Length: 423
Ligand code: ADP
Ligand code: MG
Image (cartoon, rainbow, N blue to C red; front, top):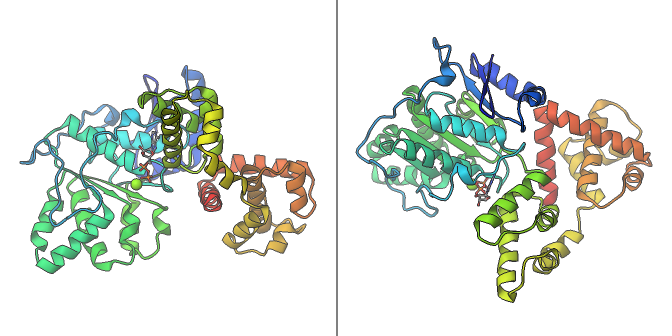
């Protein structure tokens, strides 16, 4: 493993993808903690794989991408009367993408891939819940590659449009054209791959395309709403191919990051807000970034309509419905039931005195979720879990917090439960 400081970045170069994944999953938070004294602000961490035979892989210039006839334009796939656009959206660029703990790894990997397509991680697989920035990152890669190399043949496609393309190729027996198009790309960005579940024909076609592109060092970036191995209805040979490059998660943003996103969006939309207002919105809109944007738009429209400046008072009025819905809150019973179902244990066990780990861990998770998602106090939560002490609840929250940093599987479970409960 090579450690290098590059400006305000820490660059880690691993000898192979296996080491990289281990470092990414187990040691990243520790590394970033220990790196802190060397930087003035928390460093962005970039993970790279050493190129065979070249020690200074990290410094290698980007590999030139093959020139094609479609210079300067995003490539349009055949047979796709798109429902959602296949074009690159020029507004979705890295510059407007706010980074924080929840997405910094995905962001670093995306930049790396855009700067050295086909070299670093192939495929790059980005997964995470809705509205967390997957499409934004995917499009940013396409935009940066196109900017750096206008000759590159880049295709952004939503999986549903890819499926339509396959169907159309079947109907018109035009598979040659279809295959040729995809095989000739320099960069394929495919969004929401989970949609190809239970579509064996599409999967087979995609399997060939994926192999052909990867084998010729053409970059593929895939997004998905879940961890690849957890998508049901997709052939194992395909899911295992998904993970042979780099798999990175985007997680729901924490409070400070939500505030940063709001401040940035408000500033670029021309009606800046104060930090107080940003905190107010961020505290109440927690699920994802799309909803955060929605709330901000609503507040801006409300302020314009009433010709009033944006204040907490105004935000409260503009988000009245949303706040009322929130007051209904997630109930602690709902949390207990959801967690018990998820771990296939009984609710009575969750509330019992049993201390075996298969019961105790889910109990700690449920307590932590109760603390985050309800207004209940620590003693009230303890009470609801079989009359436990408030210090037990606090201990549970601390344990889960540190486990989430150390154990990526547990962290993924936690995020999934959290998003499910928030609805
Ligand atoms: P997903 O594809 O994961 O469902 P999107 O990429 O469509 O999510 O993101 C939803 C909205 O939130 C988009 O408008 C996007 O620009 C914005 N967004 C997401 N992540 C960020 C971020 N880190 N910084 C700024 N805006 C973001
Ligand atoms: Mg998306």
